[in-house]
Length: 183
Image 1 (tube, rainbow, N blue to C red):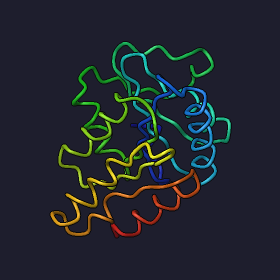
Image 2: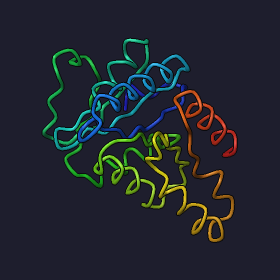
Image 3: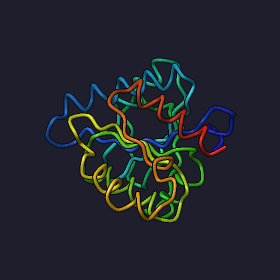
């Protein structure tokens, strides 16, 4: 956790560029990485099963941002990312607990089922962290419906816990807003 022990907000980003739509998701990850780095966020990424959000990490670091990778024991970063701090935890549940304990907010980008599952497993484990999802091409529309139909009547203030954004700048603005709501 040494690389993330400063005062900038830590944002856990769940992203994958695997599967259909790879080029667009890679571009979107790059945009988010650049915006968040310019805003001073410290990015914490999950890398499991060989899936590493390389475009996000590369863009954030190129823009001067701080990135830490939280990984399983099979992690092999590309040579260009050799200097990225890595925390290796062998157990999946341990990695998710680390994310929840370290981050100020959980962010979901359109990606694979694996990244979406890890996001929701982290949130469902009792964390009170807000979740902000980039709903590009309605990627999280089913979750938006769930939030409106199920969470709204059952969870007071659900709208301060789950937000949906349309683009990278809106995503950052929602992160700032949910952070202010927690104070």
